[in-house]
Length: 238
Image 1: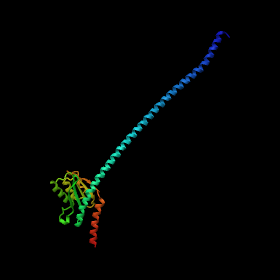
Image 2: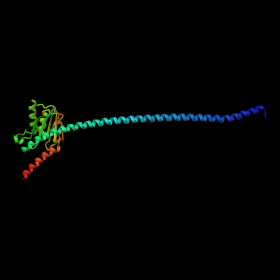
Image 3: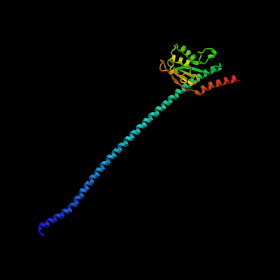
Image 4: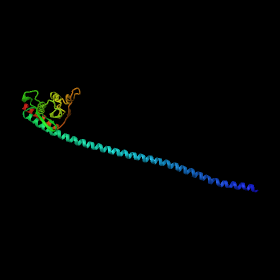
């Protein structure tokens, strides 16, 4: 074998030894690139997951703050309503005292008071039979007294408390007198005109509508009426 051929064989053998090493380097390089891309993708996914978690935490914090505000507002409303109801019950008890005066006269026990700025300015009870006067209902007697006390037929800023839902006559007088609110003990399904048969106090076409609060000391007011009629029926049957 001449020198030229021997050089070629040596060169060929060297290349064969070199190529596998180069292939391993390329494989490792590609593998490293893949690992880098995988790492980058995982990093992006981790960041997205972290962002989602952060947003979830912020949303939960907002919801907790919102619920806390709602709970606080509800507690304040409940406390306010409790104070208002306590005030309504106070004046309704006075109206019940007026109703007892009617019962003592053997009149249907209906009582009424009119309040302005926390002060009772008028009282009234049913005296229809005693006065032999259709107009002598508790509400009308109280309205008459309140107008005299204020020196005005307009009873703006006043609240009327009555143990039984007003009839059509009294409901009309309440609207005409511009009373702001009527607080009712028990309803009158046969003749009431604050929602039972009619609601004359909140007719949109009228130039004044009255706020209505129902059910204040309802049991006490209803018991007084029912007991009166039970006694009346018992006397008649006896």
